[in-house]
Length: 112
Length: 116
Image: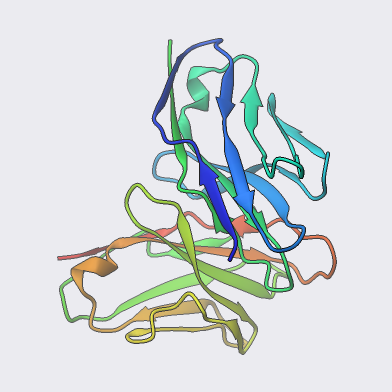
């Protein structure tokens, strides 16, 4: 079945540092890939997505590129802010059911 | 979030009681998913519903759990005879009818169930 593997957290960075959160996936077909962000006590918000190989999703300075050859969708940001502190989930969706399969989440803590 | 409403936000139940969680999707969305998030874990799919139909309940425990999405009113996730292991955050997501490329799912803020 489908699965998503994320790097374990927490990831602790200083403000303005470079961020990478690794995500790899296993799927039977050609999934769409997503990054969701969850702030404390809140639901999930879509951060970015990519629907086919080599697509780059981007939003709020975050980027991720759909790499079919390495089955990866790593999240990057050039300069993190304290307000980026949250839990980040990588997810995929495929087929007519389109339910999301989530990774276990990576907590990011950005210190001033 | 684009208007998925879940209530209550927090629910405390004693072991053996029933828990009813409600989800009103974004207006115009007829597809609803329920997910469960255990502490420090990712979300796990439970059930996928369209109006008056259960499309996929492969993620639902076989006993005590049920879900519905009636023609009128919110989707309901019902947990009977709750146990401590049911304590989790339950999230609802909705998206509009579409074929082809996956469309964005909008999530509610979740219901945090605590069983004491």
